Structures are given as structure tokens and as C-alpha cells.
Image 1 (tube, rainbow, N blue to C red):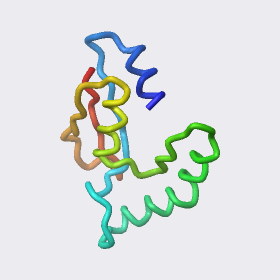
Image 2: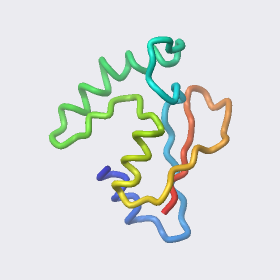
Image 3: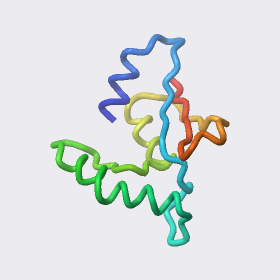
Image 4: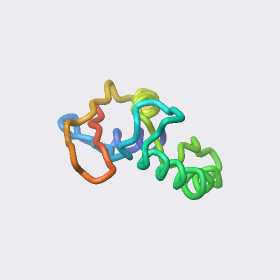
Length: 99
């Protein structure tokens, strides 16, 4: 949340904030596809332990679903999160954070 708040403070009122994240399922479930499994492996063995090693970290790891981003964005003062209609960009999706 601190990074999102810092970015919000730097962006002009007509600026745009875009977040790129992994294109995983909208909700966690046991029937995840190959991408979901790969991203969770990265998360559990690399990103999550690294983020938890930093005092005060939210410990999000690799996979940040839209609902988590919405919670973080609201806490940082953004009014809304919009999933952008960008398809076919490898294993990623994009969100616009509204000021």
C-alpha cells in the first residue's frame, strides 16, 4: 500500500497509474491451470519469502488477484481499479488505478 500511496502522490490529477500483474484466475481454487500453478510456485518459493523478509511488508507474494489490488488501492486513496482489455500479453494483465 505504501508504494501505491507514494505513486499516487507523484501523479498529476490528469495522470494515469497502470499496474501489471500475473493473469491468474480471479479466485484461488484447486483446479488451477498451468499458469496458476507456475505463479504459485514462484510465489511460495521466491517472492513470498523475499517479501516477508522485509519488515512491515504485506507479504503479497507473486499472485495479487484483483480483489487484493482493489483493497490495496482503496487504502492508498485510489477511487477505483479497472481491468484493462489488453489480451495476449504473455502471462500478464493490466489494471488502471483511478485517482
